[in-house]
Image 1 (cartoon, rainbow over the protein chains, first blue to last red):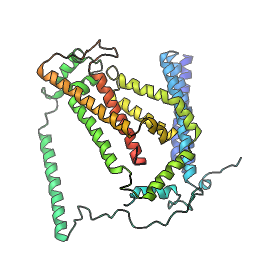
Image 2: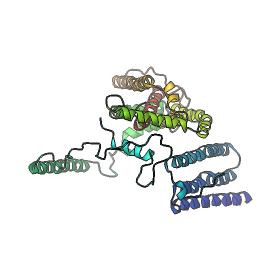
Image 3: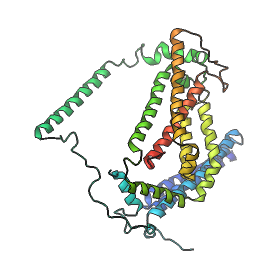
Image 4: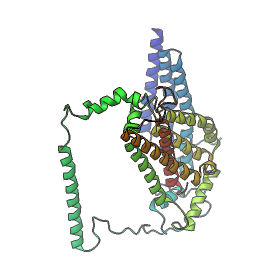
Length: 104
Length: 306
């Protein structure tokens, strides 16, 4: 019973993350900010939803496969985000107009 | 000797000269040459506008409308000959599909019935699809190949400059992640490819995964790395060899089946990986074909060379 409630809470939070990320993609108007919003669903959203699924399913081969999928997502999604934003920085000379850049 | 329009646009974009941007990017070494403003293609009048005088124009319009009407009529007449919905003689309820379901595993040997149908019972059709892939890649190579005959020296130098820029700005993150993920992706692609007769998957799906792995390798390590093991010779050998292998296998199957000869390809035990006779080699051939085609499309649209 407690397991199901925890799983439901986790999956619900994940769905909320997805919805917020989708809203952000349409709400923002610049590549870097939009990609920031879109990356939420790939990392936090999948993490919460997968945790919920593992809680529902219990430990086993299915959970191991879900963890493998999560590892693949977490490896590939930030890299693609990084590449897209890098291309934006390389090709758009006045990106500072759209977002604040802090020099370290 | 004209530069394609899309390529000029791309150059303008990479040089920061897009109308939306204020000034050129800072990292352009040589100042952009003054570009001719005329459209690069001497685009003649299109077919519908007519090439000659007004009579010609009217004639081409009449011809266009006439041919469209004829095609529409042919299609509609075909629809009239389709079998009625829910008829007893229709394809879903006739003996062909029943035979596929009841005797497919004994006759062909693959537990995945879909693979039985598309690769053996309807193998000639799938062979046509492989030929379409082959012809598509060949046409792309014919149209987009960059060599000294169809491109000016300046454009080729610009292309090389793009490669050089790519090499300089290649970053470590993608390389490290690709080094970790590449074996996994290749293994998954091979699994899908070789398990096509046991589970969903097969040549087309596995081949696209392998092609995607090649594209990822090209992005992460540069084109020289891919060229070291996948150059023109390997490409043509793999592509033509896979198609010929498929043709030989499907000819053998049709010949044996049509003449009622015994099939010497071992069917094996249904469910094990080395079973189902010709399906495994056909899957491998299709997968190689698809992988080569995907990578060729990617590189020829981007660079004009393999």
